[in-house]
Image 1 (cartoon, rainbow, N blue to C red):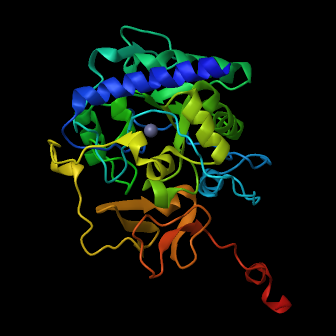
Image 2 (tube, helix red, strand yellow):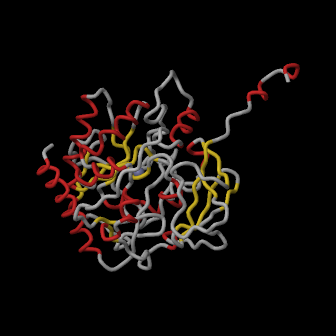
Length: 355
Ligand SMILES: [Zn+2]
C-alpha cells in the first residue's frame, strides 16, 4: 500500500469515528472489550487458542493451559533498543475507552453505518454479526490475506450494543472477562473478535493486522495498562497509518492515548443508563492487591480486576513482569501484577534419594 493510500485509510477511519463522536458528544466515555466466555455465544472468543501465541515456535500439541501461559507472556523476550518517541501522531480523534473511560455518549450506536455480515465477512442481510461500514472492506481484505497465508479466520463477535454489552457483562461470571457497558470497543462497530484456529494464526494476525488498518488492543503482557486479560483475537480498526505506527513502536492504542491525549475522546460515564457501567475503587489502590490469581487495582478511579490464571499467570507483588507497567498514579508500595508462573524447582521432581 502506498503512503497516500495509507493516509487515505487513516482519514477514512478518522472520518468515521470523528462523525460518531460528533453525534455523541456529551455523555460518558469509554469502552472495554468483552471477554468471550463459554456459554455466551456472542462473545465467545473463539480463540481458545489451542496454540501458542506468537513469536514462540510451536513444538507439538499444546494443552490449553500451555496456550494460556504463552498468551500471558510478553510478545517478545529479546530486549530491543528503545525507539525514539513518536514525534508526530496522525491527526485523528478516536473514541478512547478503557475500564475508567466511557464512550462520549455511553449508549452510543453507529446506527445506519452498521452492516450485517456472515462469520466469513460477507454481507448478509440475515447475518447476526454487524460491523460499521468503514471497517468492512479492510476486514474482508484481512480475511482474504489470512486465507492466502493458509489461515482460515472466522468472525466470532463484532458490534455489540450497550444493552447487549450489559447482558454480557452481567451474565459472565469470570472476573474481568467482560467490559462494562459503555466501556467496550465492540460498541463502536469497528472492533472484531476473530476465531484463531492455531498458534500460527495468532502470530500471523499480530504481524499482519496493521497492514489492513487493525490494531490489537489487548496483546499479552499489558494487563496493567489495559485492565483486561490478553486477547490476541480482539482487533480494532484505526486506519493503516496509526496501526502501522503502533506496531513499529510496540505500542498499543491505550499507550498512544496516554502519550497524546488529543488523539482520544471519552465521556465521563455519568450518562450511562445502567449502574453496571460504574464501579468505585473502594479501598483498592493503584498498587493493587492479589486475591488468589485475581489482580485488582484502581485504574484511574475505577476498579479493574483481571484473573491472571486466564493467561496462565499468577498474581504477585513486587517486581512487575515486563510490560506490566503500573497505571499513572501508582504509589511506591509493592505493585501487584500478573506475573509468569514460577517453574517448579528441579529438585522437587527428583526422588528423595537424590537430594
Ligand atoms: Zn473483543
